[in-house]
Length: 386
Image 1 (cartoon, rainbow, N blue to C red):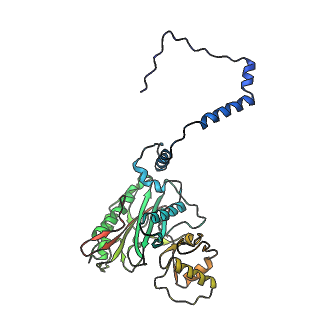
Image 2: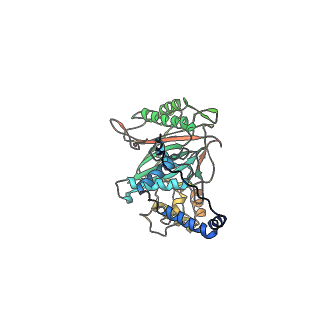
Image 3: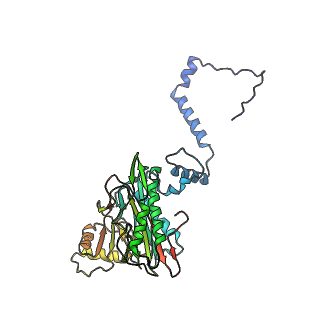
């Protein structure tokens, strides 16, 4: 509490100034108002500037606390600042790419994203990223799945996590995260894939979430799975179910697996829907004589730039055609959709449309990559925050 300032009993009272009608008219004149405006501008301009560090700190906290009163100290919600409300999905995807490249100690030429950057919202569980012209914006009530991978010399790490700003979705996120951790715990040499799925299902479906006053059981999305990973091959053949099955295939020493789980408040089953943005050249692509010259040219560009790793349409529309280090400027692909469709129809390129549960439902995803070593399993995608 501020202490009031003491006033001397002998102090003279302040005199109130009264303006004559002529003085009042002069004060209201346009010239007087302009002088007042200039004086105010001068006083504003003379205010001391905040340091760059203070500005950055205020920006970080304002972004993180978009739904709370503004503050100037760090808070727990700073971990969500990378994907804040009113944040464009395309901007999020670009920042992921930049951050991935800057985090590696290897030369940038050897580092690349191993998968398209998924930014799937709400009932869309996977395989969505904005195409050019898509102005989708992440809002406070959205649930976004960030799914991306990186590779060095063909060695791939795949990872995913979910971002939600409204705390009512926290149990949904906790269910998917706990189920992923259970899948990692049950994985190992000679572990049966069907039994791992049963353990994941038991943990996932022990959760429920209350949204807008209505309680929903969290269900596993039964037609989505984890997968094994090979050199330059993000899906190497084995699938890790997230529900109990009769699959008795075993994990083997030296194998790499992406343990990923999906929880949903909907029916727990996804179908292909919406405009496709994800593609990949088939690992065992057939040799097909292509009649369209444009299709031949596009296939050559995809093979040189991406190989068998997944890519999205937005990458090909960049000035470097998807890779700064492989292509010079001017490799941007234009009017390529007919050629791309021709490659898909011939089985050379595989399209991966968005996978959606029922509209109005919410889905969550978590994923880690593990290596099965002779004496242990190592989670190679683990970080300080996840």
